[in-house]
Image (tube, rainbow over all chains, first blue to last red; front, side, top):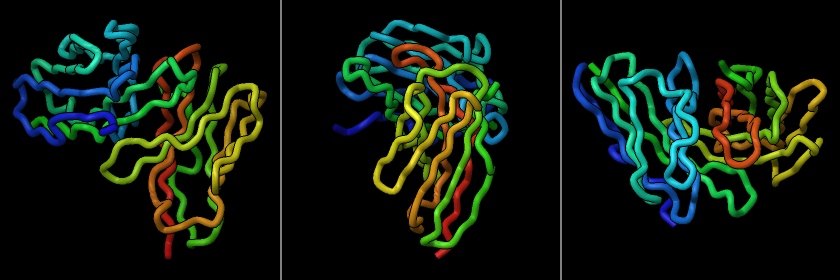
Length: 115
Length: 112
């Protein structure tokens, strides 16, 4: 298995631009999580899905952030408009409830810089 | 707010020594997990300990959990240069695969 795949790996954009981050979870996993990591705040859970349905989006910082999961193999996190304080590393993770294990498998992350 | 808080924030030891990292949390948990993050990489799961367990081993890793003190420790024995990384504890407060709450991590440096 290729693991969790994220794209792009690096993104540099200007303030006000729309940013779309993409994630492909591990095949067969029914949970998908989006996290954000910064030096100041550490790792924060933004939103997670179960069977493509958003379960908890209380971590989404504001309305500029939105996430979708149109099918079991793809999710997007969109920021519109982007701001410099959105600069961070964004991680996608997936897990399977079927095994009874709560281990989450993380992608390599997308490093976002908003100028 | 962070559920888990690791201590120390940074730790530097000589290769071959043991490294101990601690984690404290605030609310009741279902399980506690430890993850490792190498520089510029994603997190890798190391070990999971459930709330009804007190100690768990995996290779050179030993994890303890004290639910009465709301604390956990991760011991890495016979450290190697490749163990240099940041280590995070993460708490799962609900049933099933809920989102984890991470601490800010301990940055471990193993000096050759």
